[in-house]
Length: 517
Ligand SMILES: [Cu+2]
Image (cartoon, rainbow, N blue to C red; front, side, top):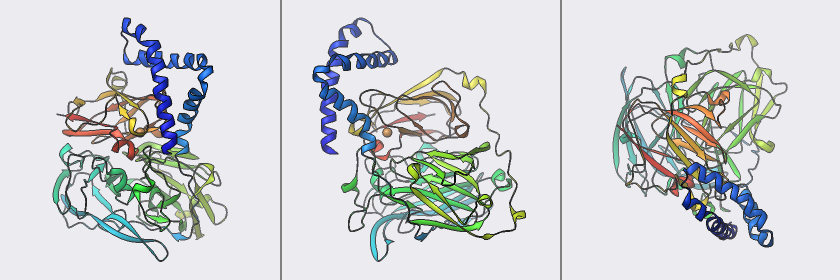
């Protein structure tokens, strides 16, 4: 990895020198916009490649290795052997609750977990040894959370997808030192959704999530309670937190040993913090709330019998109507809720698989239930709108995601805590254009996340987004060369981060900040 990185870096420097020398005279005489410059540089790329046949070793080497870089560094995922019944995180008991308010204590702590029989693995967790509980709050309620850092290192508590004031959002500014605590308050103003929480300390997020700091945050509202969908936690409404990790020979999570600058991947899949999971369940309709809590791996999920299912929610809540599909892609930090009708399965096992048919979760079906218990399909789930007026607004902010390894940037810059990159007015909808720059440096997908908002996708590469991207989103994954227009509104004030959610890219400074007032 290190060696291929070096070859790649040297080739890139040589190549850039050639491009700059050939192009600078022309460019100096004709000032260009960023976009024109990029296009011209791409044109130049082709010519140089052809002209340089004599020295094509480097050029080809560069092109090839950079194309394969991201793929090479992704560890192959092993199939779940289905040995262990899937566990569900506890739903966190409030410290206090009444009609208008609810309060909790969330404690980041060290622990040990028996992930493999007879072996103690050192892990991190919230209010427990590994991962965190599910925090459930209702729309309209005032929430107080007492945060405690019982770790031996700095951390923050970030509420991914929650629309809260910047000061309560737990970005890298809001560090709690070992032993420190803090109380945050906010009112839940957004609709029902499956959100999550994780740490966000500068340079340490990748490690702390990898070691086990991540939990789910559910928002319930009148609509979610009324809808005719499975909603009994642990019975027909299941959290599915997908994470891949590499363990050392002695079954420890040694981040420094396995860390990869372009995203740490693992050969071992964990669901809800358990290895080799299986789910045993009655033959009925079930709801899977899938969170990709991995450092960088994306999943393309389908069933081994190619059965159809319905996606009903994305990051920020319900889609307007169920989206029938056979496959979903889920990038780091994204959530997808799906309804699976298990009464339609022939035989006693159906398996959720990843691309290349890696077993993610075998689902074992118990005896058949009376089929009259099958609920009807909810036809309308939500009433989100995106007006032509907003769709046709001029682009106000342009975000260019670029690079790999330590060279990742947003708009050619690395994160600087003392620099505010953008400003926006509270409750004003702006159109942002996000582009994953495809040049010699950038050949990776980047899942782009904005704190403190749920946005709507207007277009991808000028085209209407697919149905599953028509709901509220806080993270959008863009392939190299892809460009998305999104409508962004902040309902609260403060300073918020926007960044790539490959955690190692974020830790390497692929992040900026926006001030909302
Ligand atoms: Cu990235």
